[in-house]
Length: 68
Image (cartoon, rainbow, N blue to C red; front, side):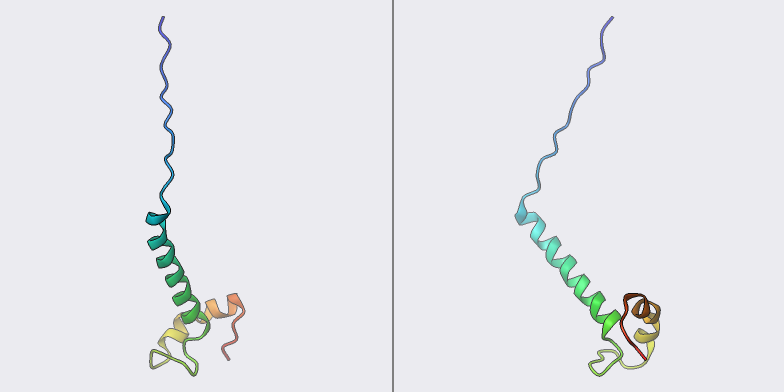
C-alpha cells in the first residue's frame, strides 16, 4: 500500500517595491474618503450643491463629524 504524497507550498514574500504603489493608492483613497465624508459641503467644497453632503450624511454622524 502506498501512502499519499502531500506537497507543501511555501509562500514567497512580496518585495516592498511592488507593495509601495498599492500602499500609496490606498493612502490616497483613504484621504479622499476622509475628505468627502468629513469636510465636503462646507467652506472648502469642491462640488457645488448638496449632493455629496446628502450622500455622506449618515457616514458623517456615524464617524462623529458635525454637519449641522
